[in-house]
Image (spheres, rainbow, N blue to C red):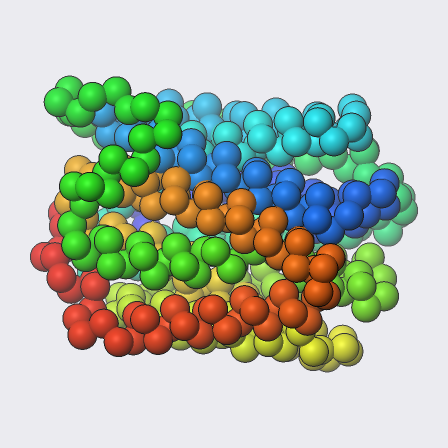
Length: 396
């Protein structure tokens, strides 16, 4: 049986190009915003608000995708909006405009994510779900290697020319849009019995969701409350006087580790169990955040970013595969979208809280606090007597 199908390949390539465009700007944004006078608190609120928009709209549009029996239109429009947002940053630097650009970008993410993940799930069977999501994450993250690499080269030849870089990021986004038109959508039956969802009705799925889903999501959301934006890791390097070029290089290294490890860890999750691999990833998060609190040299940062890449590979795609195994196939987009809605609120609180504690108590306190809460989440999952992934029979 062919595991990586044509649809999986194209969706993965679309994600690669889109992430290349986004990640050309992501490691540069905190440096750029600090250069023009914005504080860590502002950056935290900006990132938290942007992720909240993404999560809340994932819930709404995930349910719309299930109701209409359509996936591809949501995928194409979502990637289109994210592409349009890139050159906007080259026009103005006013706070409201920066918020608008980030909002459009994250709205695009919200539009596409539930439908795209459902398409990936439709291409899998339970025994291959971990590796398919892992392969997609690997390709997606390869874009996060290539994008910062282009940014690093650009800033080497044109130091401080951020606005031109924002325009350059538009190009791979156009490739993503073009590739999305090569996807062939499977015929689905529209679920007419599902009413048109309200925008903030992501909590409605929670009421009817399986107990296994609720147990899983409770733990994931507590972790989301302390899993602040990666920009704070970059700000920690900046605080320790690491040059901008080395900061971007570190970020590239992290994404390279993530991209290389995502697919093999997905295979490992299929063989050893999703729960075991996910808890391993959370353990690495504890080590990384505790390490960032006290690290002060480049060798330590290099080791921590390598571990951080392994953590991301063991949790991002794996967590979605876990969710998709504890709900019926027809509810996957709604389940992921509903989780993302709750997660978005947690993301807003997490990044805002990290920005506040950073300003009020310092970076060491912020990182240690996150590490301790993550340790509590590990204990929560460990003490559950039954592997959540096995509570319901396999879908599909």
